[in-house]
Structure formats: structure tokens, C-alpha cells
Image 1: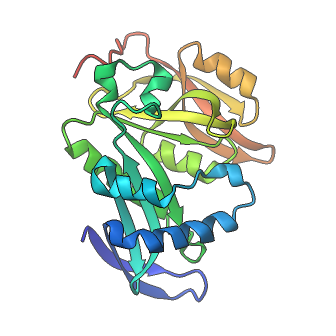
Image 2: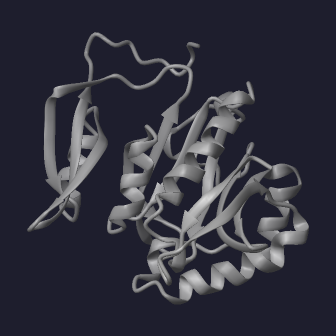
Image 3: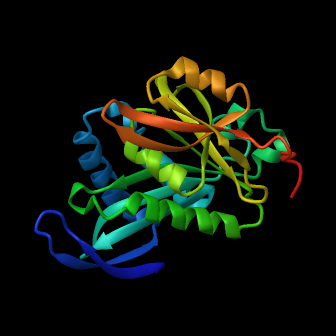
Amino acid sequence: MIEKGKIKNQRDLQYYPYTIRVLDSNDISQVMDLQRVVTSLMKNKSFCVSLSPEEHHKIMNGDGESIGLFVQDKLCAICSILLPGHREDNMGRELNFSDEELLCVAQLELSMVHPELRGNNLQKKMADMLARRAKKKKNYRYLFTTVSPYNYPSIKTVTSIGLNIAKLCKMYYQWDRYVVYKDFFNPLQLDKSSTVHVSGTFFKKQKQLLSNGYFGFSQFRDEKGIKIMFAKELSSYQFSRKEG
């Protein structure tokens, strides 16, 4: 067990005991049930790429780690991390990582919360747990994930745990995706005085900034929609993935 406590259920507003633990192959049936519930309620199906039972099995048996939150023995939230090695879907390839660097990549693959437990900040909590567990494994230096530019809660989650937007491109089923990452050993240093706010759907401007040394680091929402905050890497900061 990783953690236990009490959590608020949005259906009846009561608090229930929960436990968080590492998942194994015996939990796959519940994982798939939760995945079906969450995806069936999504208005925008491009927000999440579901995993097959085989993919979950591989993550739970050596290719990564999955943790789950249980209430009364029912799986209500899951977060998974993949250790992709030299696989073609290693997100480090999007940033032209070397073969050596690819072996140091861990990537958040799946984060889902049952509707009844939303509002408890579980996506951030569990992603942060997995990030800290990956950081303790000395072989893993870079944490990656992708997020839809239209999915404000997920953008907020990844930036809140220190990941920066490094690229905007088409992935999976030609869906728009931010590639976000964090270097545990040599965190990116940004010049916040250079901050630029860009509409979440103004992709041309965002790509221009990203190609000119800017990174997305935060976000906010106003009456006109989502705004992404970009800042340039500090000129005095000699960023090198080789160091550390």
C-alpha cells in the first residue's frame, strides 16, 4: 500500500476510506471497467487514448507501473507510467533524444478518475506520486507525457507537477497534442519576464514560440477561453541534457 485516507464522493457528498496501491494483472478487469466508464462520458473522445488489456498487462509486468485508488474494493482512479526504452513510441524521439537518452525516459500513459470522485485533485495527486517514484529510480531522468490542447484540466495537471510544453504536433489518430516533459536532474530555467500569453487554439503562434526557444509553463482560463503561458529559456542558462 502507498497511501490511505478519506475522500469525498460527489454523488452523496460523503467521505469514504480509500487506499492507493500498485496494481497488478489481477486488477486488469477493474481497470478496463473504469476505462469504459470514463471514456463513455467524454464529450471529446480525442482527450484520451485508451489502452488495451495487453498494454496494461505489459506496464504492470516490467514495462512500467500502475497505481490505483480503491474505495470499498472498487477501483475508482488509475495512473500509469511506461518505461518505453527504445520503442518507437518513446516520446523522447519527438525532441530528437539520442539512443542513450531514450533509455532514461519514463512517460505518463494513462490517468483516469471515476466521475463520482472528481473534484479531489486526484489526477495531480497520482501523477505526482508516480513521478516521484520514477525519480527515485536512478536510471530515469526525463518524465514525458502528451496532452490535448483542448483539455484544460489535464494541461493544468501536467504543468502543476513541473512539466513544460516543448512541442505541438499531430499524434495518435492525427489528434493535436502537446508534448510535455521534465528533466529531473537539470530542470528547465525560464525567464518569466519574457512571458507571452497565447490563445489555446492559436496553434500557429504557439508553434512559432516553441521553435524559437520558448516553452509552455502554465495556463489560465478567461472569458475568451484557455490561455497558455510561454516563456523563453534563460539565455545565461546553458541547457544540456548531457549534464547531470
